[in-house]
Length: 80
Image 1 (spheres, rainbow, N blue to C red):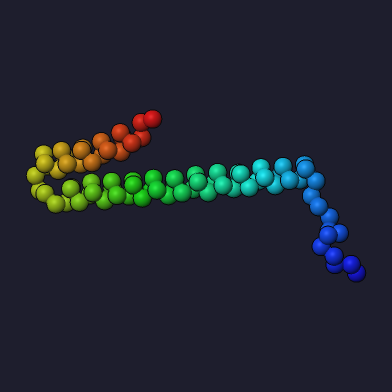
Image 2 (image 1 turned 60 degrees about the vertical axis):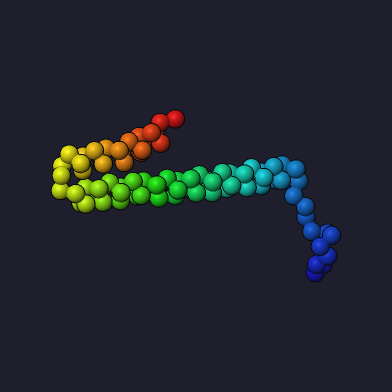
């Protein structure tokens, strides 16, 4: 059996293009995954701060204003 690396089959241009397209897609998916994880972290932070505002003060007006301000951040972020 010949194990010479120089005689190994080489991918032709079409396969190279397919492989490059697959790698590009993997990179795009990884970037999107990272962005989605960051968005989830941000939303969790907003929810936590809103709940802290709700439970930290017994005044309904103050709680309402605090929660409204925090949740406004989310709506500003969501707009393109």
